[in-house]
Length: 324
Ligand code: PBG
Image (cartoon, rainbow, N blue to C red; front, side):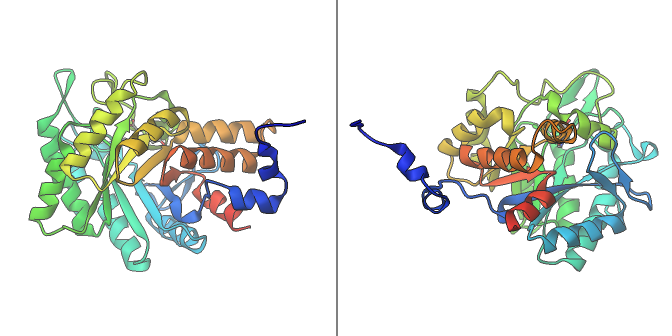
């Protein structure tokens, strides 16, 4: 048969497939999200099998284990005791709070580990919103002022990168200015640029007891139906001084990752969120899917779409699989 081309020639052997492979997943691309609480013991999360909420000591051990696997970066998410939550989320600004303490301990024990912190008020706020909640709505500019202080608390503790996940307008520029004026010009901003109001965050909120007590997050997180709007967010974040842009969730939003990738010269991150983790984990535990194969395929697809780095709860397992 005469054909204009035979693409199968490039798939003929493992060696040729290796030569022609476009996307190569590497452990260096992975960011490991870690849950932490103030209690002494570590707590295996029932809502996220295989994921643990760590004590400060457990966190250090886990970070060390991750380092040995070649993982270069972690991002911290705290569970704040109910008694320390308040309408103004004041605990977010406590210099001796859980996150600053953990950042200091991590940077001391593992100076080469990149420590990223989440900037938003939902774990600290008795209303469970990422911003200040007044009369049934989330205030934008008043929230941004608090987020700047929160970012400074993290920077003073030694955070390498702050990651605002709140989706308030203008927060990247204000946080950048606050960091500059406090001489933290080397602290980066990984902006949650296109963060969707997604049902895939359910297990995460269960892990931290951080679900909104009233209302939902649709007035600040993006409508899952919108793609173009992600480019508007990306342009604003870039103009405001973000160092990296994030799309979240990842798997169901590959088109958004690809569009943001094409629209910016900044590095792009994607967050394979708790619900995505849980889908892969549940199907694997039932014996319905081959865990290693689907996890590596899903991460490869996220990278192929344009993500330079991927936040995933599978980071340690993926690191091990990639090293084999
Ligand atoms: C909150 C925050 C959320 C996640 C990361 N930061 C939840 C939310 O916005 O309600 C979700 C991560 C996940 O589901 O894995 N600022």
